[in-house]
Length: 140
Image 1 (cartoon, rainbow, N blue to C red):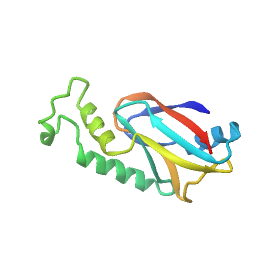
Image 2: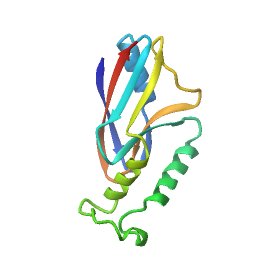
Image 3: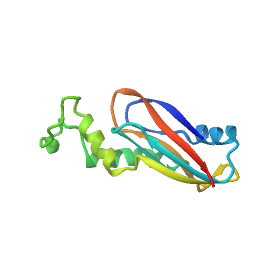
Image 4: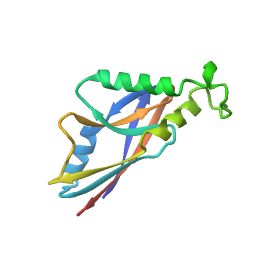
């Protein structure tokens, strides 16, 4: 079974879409198997991360900005891919260090996530986007 999740973003943020994925699994009557998620863009990422304290997501985004500030920051003058704006190449760099796909075991139709884990699309660009995440469930 396959589907596409569409996620609207409005700038850098962690967008929790765990509930949507869980609802889809219920809707297809998933049993035991493996769920694969893959983001269909090169300037955002997927991540399994803590879903209890929003400070975790804020700190993660802050850390990513320290690793790859905008191209107009003095430390990033070496970048050559700047035609799409000062946030574009840093977004690609962030996507290069975070996963763009995830595999999650599913037992009796439920993802085997830990108590405090959620599935996030991590938006790295400043402008609003409609992001797509491809999902496939393979029964096993």
